[in-house]
Image 1: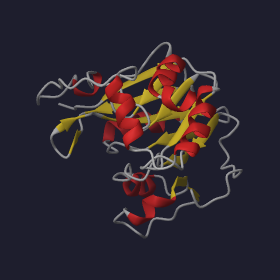
Image 2: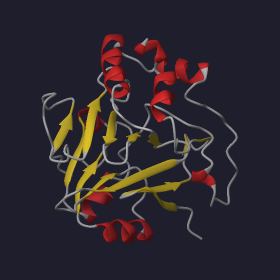
Image 3: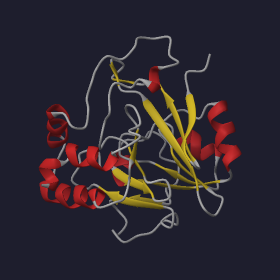
Length: 237
């Protein structure tokens, strides 16, 4: 039986949630997100395997135009997405080049290498903010139409209940919420440039979003901007 939970969390926004344990031990869950753009193309944050059911749903949405690598450690499935959609633009972060095993796949844009004002073609639908002061060099994305923030490691919402809901393995017990002191401590621990974090955390806080779609943990359906401000209060206040 498939372990992937596929659902439309908002109009034209689909998530693909499945089990994933960091270091094979810590159950954080994994999630890819696909968005149908206003021009009919599809934008995909690729962070889980491209299974047949995942591919079938993405193909139903339209032609994949963008494959996004959200930070330097979410690169495991980029090659299979790019092989499946060779005409799509692959946009990632520069530090990924130091980690990815398949050095043959071409990137069409790289946060951290390109100038900050660089646009990749999806900005009419999705804003982006590159966190140069975050250890994993994450990028936050705002789908304006659905008021959804999409991100990888910038904010966690554990336990990963949805991501393990179809799993035959253990049920995750670890809890890490955005408003907890532990989450705030984790963020400060992976900060490499406080001033850059202040700048970028405030940029995201200024965005209009209600929902947060994290790669790890359950989707925050409401009050997402408050959750972000709680997690990043050290940098925003």
